Amino acid sequence: MASQTSYGRAQAEDLQALRSRILELKTELDAVILAHNYQWGEVQDVADFVGDSLELSRRATTVQAKVIVFCGVHFMAESAAILNPDKTVLLPEPTAGCPMADMIDAPTLREWKARYPDAAVVCYVNSSAEVKAESDICCTSANAVRVVEALPHKRILFVPDQNLGHFVASQVRKEMVLYPGYCPTHRRVKPSDVEQARRLYPEAEVLVHPECDPEVVALADAALSTSQMLRHVASSQARSFLLGTEAGILHRLTLHHPDKTFMVLSRALLCPNMKKTRLESVVRAMETRQTVITVAEDIRLKAKRALDRMLEVG
Image: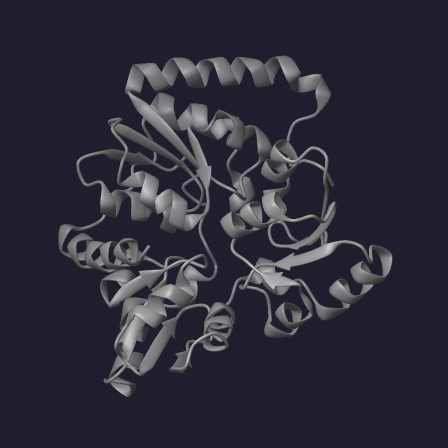
């Protein structure tokens, strides 16, 4: 699999028309388009900036445009709204959610906090604004280890991804209490997928996301966020790579490194929510000014504190 596209060759003219319309609407609305690495290739191509959760969070704080069109899932657009209360944030596909984020809510987190009153709550950004508001600090897969190390607490309550939490626990000397959430897409990768891929492509480097199960991470050459994968590939002497993360990353990797070969470890590495957004979705959202993502001010201020602390750590 060399690229991630939802369009066939016969639709090339329609694709160009959609791109042209998006450019017109960007000027009309004074809009900027942010897209996650897991989006379809053609969506990434029309974006002003493509990145992982940490990169997109940082970019959201520097946006000068009046409108942010966020091509991703709900919690990502919500984070942009938290950080930019004076801007309009549009989510092209309102039903693009995150099963992991849905695995915990604010009342449940408060129950866990009561069990571990001495623990600092580190919240993966793959979570709702209400959960962020109940947390001490947020993190992404790219900076989770740094965030946990930066805290003075000896005990950390890590929510909601137990696999990322397990990876962090292997890197730090702190007691990690892990909430039992997970990413259904990354959980589809099995140790047998890694073992079979290594037999077929023994020369390839195996890079997996820390949202994968610990048994998969243990078999990989490295566990990296998508931004870290991009940097690793750029500096690696390897010519081929086996990736344990959502297949959308193939588009950007192939674009930047056409001389290298990239394959995903499993055909099941497709996030149905990330793949909901298409160029038609972007055009519709911009033409109708829907769906606007808002966060209640009392929740926003608390959640922003947790996000700001994360951005300060870097």
